[in-house]
Amino acid sequence: MARTRSRPRHPASPVPLALPTLWGGVAVLWKLTCPLAQQESLPTRLATSVVFFTVGTGLIWGLWRGLARELRQVRAIAQATQQVLLRPLPPRLDGLSVAAGQLSAAPGAAVGGDLYEAVATPYGVRVVIGDVRGHGLGALGAVAAVLGSFREAAHDEPELGGVLRRLDRALARHLRERARHEHPASGCWNPLSPSAEEFVTVLLLEVARDGEVRALNCGHPWPYRLGPGAEPVAAGDPLPPLGVFPLPDELPAQRCTRLLPGQALFLHTDGAEDARDREGRFFRLEEVLERAARTGAPPTAVVQRVHAALLRHTGGRLTDDVALVVLRNDVGRPSLAPPALPRSIGQIRQDGRRATGHRNCTRGSR
Figure (spheres, one colour):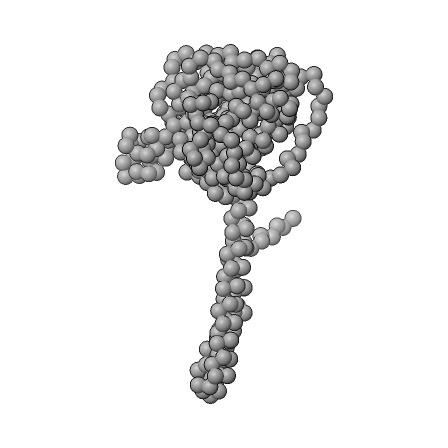
């Protein structure tokens, strides 16, 4: 069966400009050849002004239509690309209810320098959350390298240490390739390149079927456990971020906590705790989590509440990307469909811009 190839559609088509251009040609021809147009009377001047104003308006309208069509197509392509890079997490994974969300500091971007992923493996549910140095679209290369490696290594490696080594090697390859592109004449990695200073903080988690959580932390904030309240959990001193120093020879996963049925784990990047308002006061993340935990909010609602509180606190002006992941142990609970978000992130961002005032405190009082 023969297949026909469709011709590509150009974003900025010249068709909307055809009519204004024709008007302009007629107006110029009328001005140069028509004896009436050479007169200096007031009616003639008014007619000439109306003709050329109409032509100018038509040209501007045609250009606006072409640019608006191109912008819509660019946004659709960018949104599809971002969904592939930081794809939505499944609502349930092996007895865990899962929810995640991201706020980018770059205007109009759905993703930035933060990353997260959760997959069900034979070894348990494995989760990664990380933060690339810097923020916005410039960090997407490192995000893609780390996420691509995790999505394969999480299924292949029986130990979390093996997964972390795979992430470290993938990041190192990305940084070497980026350095070569930045300095093609050198043909090798340059320690003075900006990419040589790039690093990624990473928190790797493995949730077993009995609720035991093991972790490997490379310079990332520890999570909170949500039960009757909000309690920060930790498992010793973290390792340095990936890309700064080589990993040690031994990488034993550390027992972090145990999730009982109904308890949840709240993962976040440092953009959530470091967000400030106009007066320089830090965001009170733990207080927001305490209120959500007391009301028994599901994971989707927890993410939404923290996002809304963050945008109210900052007035909608984030200075760093924020990523949130919530995992709740639903073993023994009935399998229910997760509630749909009543508002989009864009609507929440608008609410945050309109909000005025929010009770905050300094970092020292947290």
